[in-house]
View 1 (cartoon, rainbow, N blue to C red):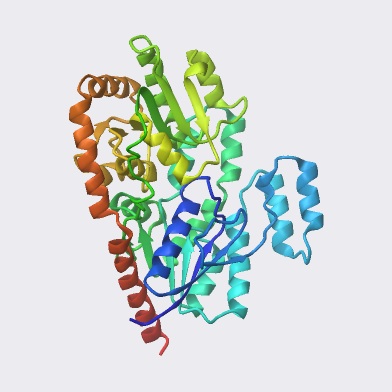
View 2 (tube, rainbow, N blue to C red; view 1 turned 90 degrees about the horizontal axis):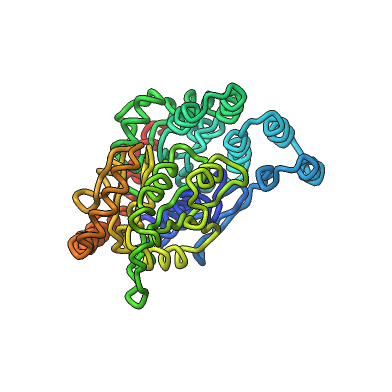
Length: 417
């Protein structure tokens, strides 16, 4: 098999924040292990990559590292060799926008004009104007985990305040760009059929251009730790606080319901809480402050340890293009309660208890049912891990990627012959 030089583009690749950094780390390793040379070209924050994978940094201003205007001014003036993208990034953020996708796309396009010895370029969901120029010069694949239009709609629905809605309009202004770019991309990979359907509907993409390939999981990393003791009153979930799409409110309300029958019941949240934000106010309103514990900036090993000491995992999301927390919990053999929406039924098969979205009563009732017959649900969880091992292993998934990669290169060469 031909050895390829592959560039993976990622506008931001935070080590611990969300699935983008996880995806970039995993896919770069998977393609390297089958013999290809992989460079990850990333804007800040930069990813934590496996040894032997080259990281090329395309520094933007990284303005969301701070919310101090003074510090942001310093970042702009301290940036060497500033260009129009730096000024655009600064003023867009100043007025409430999120410009990183556009500015990274321009920087990546400029970089690849001078470093064009790649056989293929993979972009991780920037959907920026620069990608269309790259696609004209090199074989190109766009990864769309899910249309961000869903995030926008759920955030608008979460508040009736005009000021909040305007701030969301400004933040999601990049969607205008993505809606223009997405239909012009020739090759798209999506991690689920549900996500593919969303891309077709929201971005008006041709379904023939979209291939569904699940994301993979290292089941040796996410595994049950036999020496750990499960706390029968510990629930666990993964959710960024104040992100309506993740449905954390309903897990918190379910916990409140459960406290009357199980006073020791508590919830571990893998994610961060925003000071004085909606989630903090809700926790105080429900009077469960002493029973909710947020864990952020932690490693996969630490996450696995938390799963291994928890009795039940909850995913109360309102939408998931591909739910990493779903397959991580299942791989750790934790009985799982998850919402019956978007990609989740595709992922779990019959190995989780599915509940209606926005229904905290169904969550609390399901927790009680599992506690009452834990042996039964633990057996389901054990079989669920086998399901994850068989379906979401990187060896199988990388082969699917490789098939699409070579088809993309072949078609590009035929068109440009």
